[in-house]
Length: 332
Image (cartoon, rainbow, N blue to C red):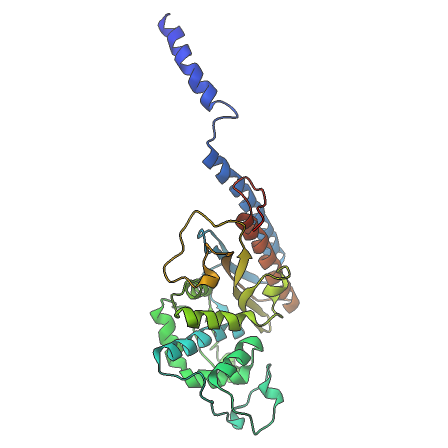
């Protein structure tokens, strides 16, 4: 056998092994399938964002794999009532540290009453005794501005700011109380970015802000409100811990969505300190989502955008959570 024939004979097994149709290893095939699915999501998100008459931003991240998608994630947006989430976290952090009693009644000054949404504005003095924990439910479930201002006074706005900076959030700022129109006219809006709000939710979900008990209580409070644009996107029975916010020309929503998992993800072990309810290897596989819009021509279009982005994100992450590497759905 001559040199040329020998080379051809040796090349034949390699051609059979790596030739057309057999060249891509199984792992690469899996990546290609997922990349195609991700491209569909990206196309949907691009269409939704291009069609919106306003400026949108979002960041979504799977807490199991760390996979994320984003748009304008570092733009600073006015966040309206979404700023109530840092107030809630500061409240429960102070309770955890022993400097605040959640069960103790909070004095309610009728002169400090503000309107703009909620329950307390419909009540008349004398007000019943309400604890800090009860005010927290009013703040998050009913987005009560009066209750929020009482809690801001209780925990201290400066302490909220210092805590956020200590956690590394430089663009999330509590600059004013609710319904302080003079401050708003002066440009002192409460602001954040999609990246920082998503990171704040991720740290909450991973048990890095509060202990397991505090984390569970806060998430339970955030699950209560069923009237949000984010929750409207989810199928019946799917839970989310979220907070929405709105101003004229502004719509925002941030949350943790608990996706049912047909199989435990093998890509990443749960981090130490994970509460069971948000353990990526448990029965649910959560993702965090922060969607913000501003300069809206039509406010209702902002709500619809949040709902559509959430639905697209849920469809994508739930497909990954409930399917084999070949895309076959696996029942829990």
